[in-house]
Each structure stands twice: as structure tokens, then as C-alpha cells.
Length: 225
Image (cartoon, rainbow, N blue to C red; front, side, top):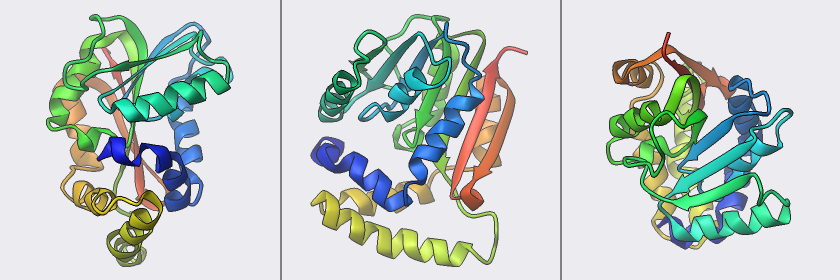
């Protein structure tokens, strides 16, 4: 499915989020407090938007590795990296979030943007993030949630369940991809529930921040005290 929509994935992200996806990515990168010396791992990297943002940020990561299982998505990401002349700093690798092709305690920071809910066992992916982070390393995870304002929630759910899939089908030309999106969000533990999963995995200083009225959550945590 992800390979089938790879060519229109970036456009869909912008259209369906009203351009807010760029803001969410910038917020996630800022929480990592990069200094320009770090090695950053971006899991479920897709077409590498977050990986590239990590390299382009002020005092961005010295080295970024993006991991994803969808080969077509990675191919588009490689093209974008070349266009931005970031080949020397951003590398993409095909791999599984539940068995990361990365050595223990080898990265300073890690990110996942709208991918953790697609992992078959998200708790295993969280444990993998903890494994590859150095002591004191930071993680930032973006994922969908539900609006924190009760009056907004019914309107959002109507858009998310009825309007968004129709736009997604029309733009992606894939009959199932954006039917899957609300289904996957509806079954994923968001907010404090996912925060508890990170804590149970062994992360410390776990925070769950609602963004854009709570339609997206930014989860941050550290390895170690």
C-alpha cells in the first residue's frame, strides 16, 4: 500500500493536513535540542521529510539515518536528498522498525513521524528505539490523536472518517490507503496511554503534548534519568 502511494505521499500530507505537517515536523526536531554533532535516527522515514528536516535544522544533526520498509518510499526520499545536496549527511536504509539495523547505543536522537501506529507491535519498536539510543539520548514521536476540545471532536471525526478518505482516494488513486488511516488511528493508544507505553519500555521524562487542538500528539522522552 505504501509503495503504491509513494509518488503522491508528500502532496497528500500537505493537502490533508492543510500544511500543518511542516509545523509538526519542525516542533518535533526542536525538542531534540540538536547541537550539530549528533547522529539522528528517523524510523518509518517514508520519503525522508523528517530525516531531511533533522539535517537542515539550525545546528542540525551531523549525520541522519532514515529507516523504512517501503522501497518505493525510500526511492523518492533518495531523489529528494540528492536535490537538496544532502547525500553526505542523510542516508536511507530499508529495514524493520521492530528489528532496527542499527547497533546498540549508537545514536544520539531518534524520531518517528506518523509511523508508530503502523508497526505491528509498537511496544517492540519502542524497545528498539531505547536499545539504539545512547544514554541521555532523546526521542520525539509524532502521531495522530483526538482533539482535546470536546466541541471540536465531532466535527474532526466527521472530517477524518468521511471527508479525508475521499480526498485521499482521489489524490492517491488508491482505493484502500486512506480508508486505512482512520481505522489505524482509531485502534492506536494515544495521549497518556501511549506515554505509559514509553514509560513501561524504560524511557524517562515522558511527555505527551497535544498539537493543533490535539489532532496530533508530540511524545518526547529520554533514555536514562
